[in-house]
Length: 273
Ligand code: KIV
Image 1 (spheres, helix red, strand yellow):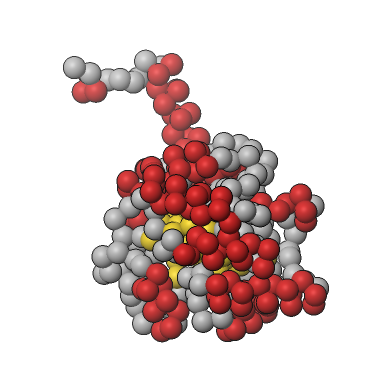
Image 2 (cartoon, helix red, strand yellow):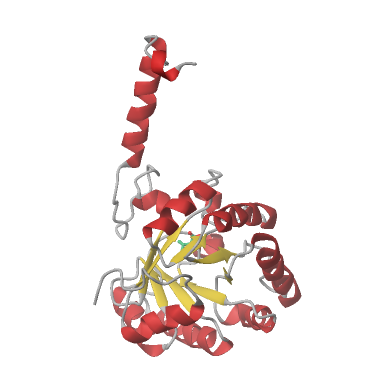
């Protein structure tokens, strides 16, 4: 099987993602929050782009994902969608815009789809948000679930450590995954849980399971693009593989520019009119 087996596909759809799982082709997913980065990630051949609420941390510098608003998520999503030709674009519904109120969940999902042109939404949680998921799906909006470490609930957990290590939480997670599948979610993200449990979930549900810190025995992988490119500085969890050191490259480029400006080496004659 070719590594880039699906690279000749014109547009990734939920149907194609399901086919990838069925034939054992791993699904690649990265975040993007702006036009330039989304263009690079899409042209490189990624299957899914997540406009994650991690934009709250990465783009806005907040400590958690809680402060980001619907308007801000729609701004990021709109910029990403403008750049994307092939990838399937999923947008996080931000904290406080779907929990505990299925009418608001539906309104939020419709706003995201209508105003950004994205292809699906993602929500965090299991049984607690089943009604919201059902309501969103009733409008024909594809929903991706998110279980395990769910950063919108960080103040309930208290830490960003590995979730579902104990049997009770692991059993609830498996039950929640089944609920999300039965409700009609097209895929589930599993964040920071034991690899053995993630494998069990991927074998239990028939929809694609995408992991972040969930081991290799799931149907695909997702990372925050700024983390894997080495742009973010202090976030180095065990699950993160850094594929570049862009922070160093960018810092050196900026320092070289400053040096050239101060030394009157930039611009030169060929760079002037
Ligand atoms: O917001 C985000 O970037 C996410 C990923 C970590 C899955 O939800």
